[in-house]
Image (cartoon, rainbow over all chains, first blue to last red; front, top):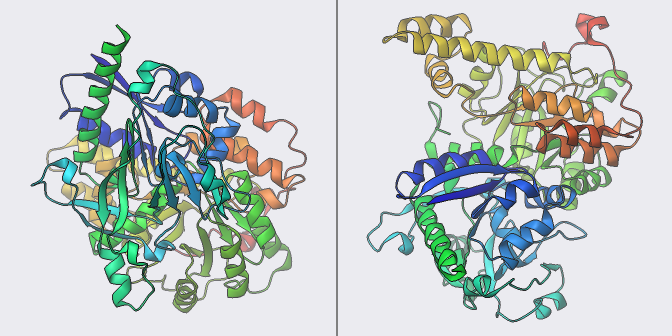
Length: 267
Length: 305
C-alpha cells in the first residue's frame, strides 16, 4: 500500500520532521511511504496524512491564509478527518481554542476540542528538555527526550458538541476555530467525542511550587502535553528535534490503520 | 542537530532548537512597538528590537550601543513572537543585561560599535541563545565554538545591496564543499581535514561535523542588504534557512506590503510565479548604497574576526 504523508512547509522545522519520518518509515512496514513538503492546495490534495511542524503559529496561519491554504487545511483535518499531527505551533493550530494570541487574534484550523495556552512556560530562557513518560509507546518504554521550546500546553479539555465552541467565544482573549462538518460517514467514523490525554508533565508544576510561584491546584495533576481525538494528534514538545523516531513510527502505524479503515468503509 | 563540543547537549538542543523553529521565516528589524506589530501582522517569525536600523546608524555615525531596555521591553509586551536584541561584539555586560530582560535571542552584532577588538563574548554560559555573523566557514565555526546557536551572513547591513550577503553565503558553501570533498576522498581524511581546519582557523571537530553534514551544524540565516522579495528568495535558493531584513522594510515606501511580500517569498522561494506576484507594486525600495563604491572604513562586515 502506498501512503503519502505531507509536512506543512510554510515555516518552521519541517525538514527535521521529513528526516525523522523517513527514519521511522523503516520501522512502520509494510507500506510504501512517500514524504512530501506541502506549500500548495495541490500538494495537500495528494496527502493521506499531514504533520504540522513546530515554528511560529502566527506566521504559519498568516502565510497559510495568504497562500489559499487555510480552508483546504480545515477541509483536510475537520471535513475529511484525515490523520493529522501537530507539534508545538502545530498543536496550537489544531486546537479549537487558544489564548494569549497576538493582538487581533489568529486563525486556527481546529480539530481538537481543547484550549491551548500559548508560551505557557514563558520566554526562551524558560525553554527546557527533560525525560517524559509516554505510556502509548508501551508500558515499559524508556522515557522520551522531550524538548519544550516556548511551548504551549493544553490547559482545558472542552466538551465536544456540534458546531462552534460557543462557551469559549464568551471568554476574554481567547480565539476559536470555525466549525466544519464531517463530509460523510467515512469522515464521521474517524471522529471521536472524547479527547484522550496521552501524556502529562508533572515536573514543572512541582518545580514552580518549590520556587514559591503560584500554582493552580488543578495543575498539580500535571500539564497536558500530548492529546488525541479521533484522527487528530497533538504534542506540545518537539520529537523532530531529537534523533528518537519512536513517536513518528507510532504515528505512522496510526496513519496506516486509518488509511486501511477508510479503504474498507469506502468499499 | 548535534551539540558541538564543549556544550552540554541538553542546553544546546534547546538553544539551537529555537533557531530551528524560526527556519523558513523572516526576522525583521523594528525600532518601536508599532513597527513590531506591523512585522507580526506581516508574518515575521521574530523581530529584532533596536534603537536605530543600520541605515540610520550609517548616516548618523557615532557609537552604536545596545538599545534602551525599556524600549526592548515595550516591544516584548507588544508581540507574541520571539524578540531578539543586539549587543556589541565582546560586550558581555550588555549580554547579561539583555538576558536579565528576558529577550529570546541575542545578536552579538558587527552593526553596533565593537566593545572589544580581541575577544568575542564566550556564549556557553548564558541561558539565552546567541546568533552571530560570519563571512566564511572559519568565522562561523569560531562563533559556534564560542557557543553561538545560530549563524547569519554578515552581508553589508544598511546598504540594501545584497552582494556581500551572497558572497558570504557562497564562501561558506564552497568551503563546506571543500571539507566534504576531503572527507569523502580518502579512508583517512583526518590529517588533511586538520590541515584545512588550520587554514580556515576553525576547530577540527566542527570542521569535521560540517563536512559530515554538508552544512553548518546550526541554523544559518541570510542578513545584510536584503531589500526585495527576490533578494530573500535568492538567499534561500543559495541554501540559507531564513532571512533577516534590517533597514529594507521600514526604509521603503510601503513597509506593510513589502514585509508581507518578503514573508511570502521566503516560504515560496522555489516558485517563480508566486515570486512574480508578490514582487508587484511594492512601491519604492530603500534607496541603497552601492557597496563597491563605499570607502573601506564605512564597511561593517570587517568588524569581528
